[in-house]
Length: 370
Image 1 (cartoon, rainbow, N blue to C red):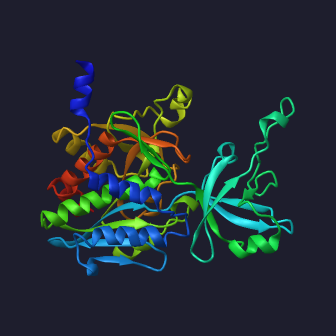
Image 2: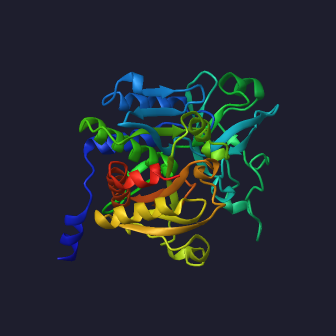
Image 3: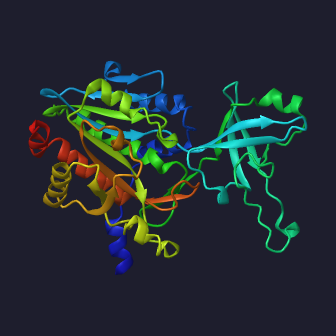
């Protein structure tokens, strides 16, 4: 009986939805190198909107405009970049050192397959070497203090600088080999859910509004922004251009529902997968906007949970000081690793919340109030 109840409540992703999400995950989109994923998102959206409504700028920000009854702007942002590395040096023997881009955990770097996007635009397989455990002295660790240490060597098989330089150059980007898969029930794993799952949510929202031919009360700007992972997101540039009255950030947040995280819960706050989308409360978010989102969730029976912000958690909304801002978080285990885990029920709750809020009269009081 229990198994049957679980199966009945499972979210069944359609083939189209799964193809979209897998496509987002498998496209390399290292911070500063987002051209391919920007074009992929544009291609997906052209099925629902004219090209004139979808703009890609020179920094690879994608901006989608849906005109409303009013020119007052509401902006919804998710970043399309992800963490990875860059080739930092190639020595005379052909040993390749790398430097991180974004917050990469040194403990998980070694012994991993990677792909390099070389200067010719081609993808090359590589691995990051690791000293065999058989030869480690008692208490010895191969953990690198930084990725430019010689212990962390990018290996493409060949040696000698002149041979390596035929395939790679200093400044070429690389990332863990992309992966995407289904676990049990509604759980999925992948590399780059941060924040490609936010991009997925925005695409689904745009698709809904466009196919239903809905004209919202306010002009909606959906932004897929670049370079968030290096702390210099370009969403603020777009916000400066359109001056939104309301800015909603859609990003992942740390789930703490794993035994190993029990102590960490005190720092990050309780957050479980399959308990709903997260609405942030606290410093740096607009209290009336947060309350309006909460009321919308309750009214529409959308599962949600709270986490707190002390104003220093590094989301893009912190750069948009002149707009009323909110943060919507997708619970995620194993953040900034190649095996991030989420539950699609949380994702769909987030889509449901934003869809109902952005198209509701409740937004009026937030936009119009000074």
